[in-house]
Figure 1 (cartoon, rainbow, N blue to C red):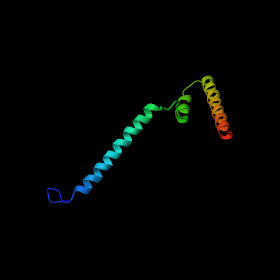
Figure 2: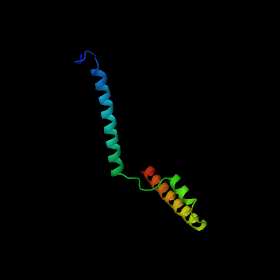
Figure 3: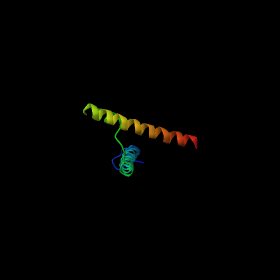
Figure 4: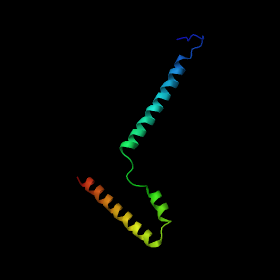
Length: 83
């Protein structure tokens, strides 16, 4: 299909528009997903980086808490696999 300017640019405009539309949709879906299901805990990198700045007794306490959380997760995974 020829555009009024005499060039056949309609397909490239359509493709570019579809790509922009897809990017906008993905950004909206990602934002909605992050709002609905926020990450409940900090990642291991964040926890260990924070831990380095704590005194020794608090570091040990944090290690114990992290180990307890890991054990709890392992038990949950084992119970799900056993079903």
